[in-house]
Image (cartoon, rainbow over all chains, first blue to last red; front, side, top):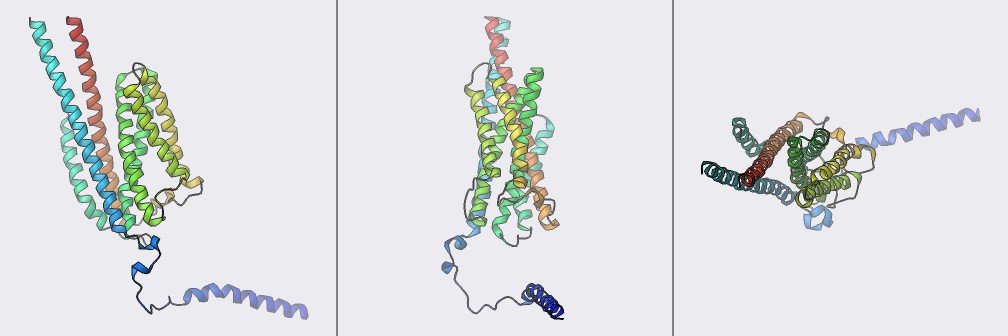
Length: 95
Length: 220
């Protein structure tokens, strides 16, 4: 019988332990009693997201714009040299 | 340049103008909030960064096997794409990380191998610029290391301990976040094709210029 009592006690204890997370999950979030200014948060939590987002998107646009300008200029210069040299060759072959 | 190029350039421009509005309509991520929206430019640029490495490697192998200069031009152009899309990836990632991880950089497998990949692309370009005659074959060999690294970069987040999001995040995205992502992926893919075509065109014109100089020498 003592063994049965111990078994029942252990089962009840296990059931209690298992129900703790479920009970905790049912608890509502703590009520906000006061508003906390962002300046009172730790420094890592104060960092605003918008400047980082704007910086990222601006950087992407600037990089691609500069690259397209650079590529266009290089293409124009080479094309000009090709045209000039082609014209010179034609004149040389005529003369 | 071919006719399709200009039409595609207009479509690409419209897509990039529209992309901030599409991204603004995306749901906020529950833990990271606003800063997570960097993802919509960071991830497509990272994919194009890896694609550049693969294109460069495949073109280099074909150049080494056939000796066809067209493959060499494509490899050179792709290496430059890797540098451009790589810098976008390596700058936007830390800006996102600063808010969500609390630090700009961590030396985990993904970020470190991405940095190595970017440096390999730079090494390729420096070798082509200053290596002199024969450098194209040395550079092609270097490109193979870069291509092998792309696979490592992709799977690294699944095998090594890191706080970088794993590859399983993208297939599980809900429509409200998935649509803006795939819209941006399409925009970046189109931009990649257009820039690659322009860069290949530059190499073609340089080859024409070289042949013209040789013709002039022969004429003299």
